[in-house]
Length: 159
Image (cartoon, rainbow, N blue to C red):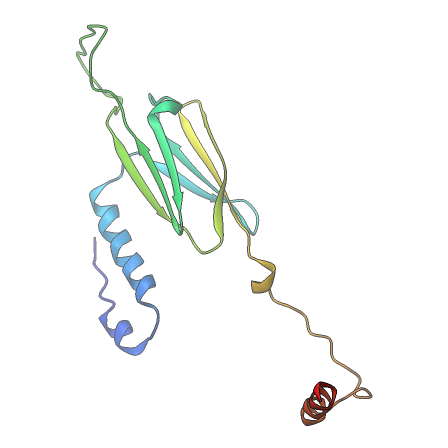
């Protein structure tokens, strides 16, 4: 896989270090690990779903941890052969895993379910009202008050 060199962009931008680090780390991680396979879906403007194929894992063997801007899904399988079964061929992957997903700001885990060997994690982006775009009404010009007039009136009231 080709490696991208972000050096020219780093020289001409300010404040995008986190974005470039995410891209570089993600490229490295994709080269090294592809288990378990997963899908990422977008359902509507602010709803997302991550589906991981975790055949053979019980819900007690999977841990989902949501931190700020990071979702960590880890599966730990016991390796002991307590029932004495001897495998002649083991084609179903049964190894431990750790999958990391970088989340955008204001994205939170809404629900997680395990069914038919698929772990489904629903995510929702909830932008606070203070961060949402606001429509500003335009006055007709009849009630225009100068800023300097407002300051004088407030000083008169205080005195």
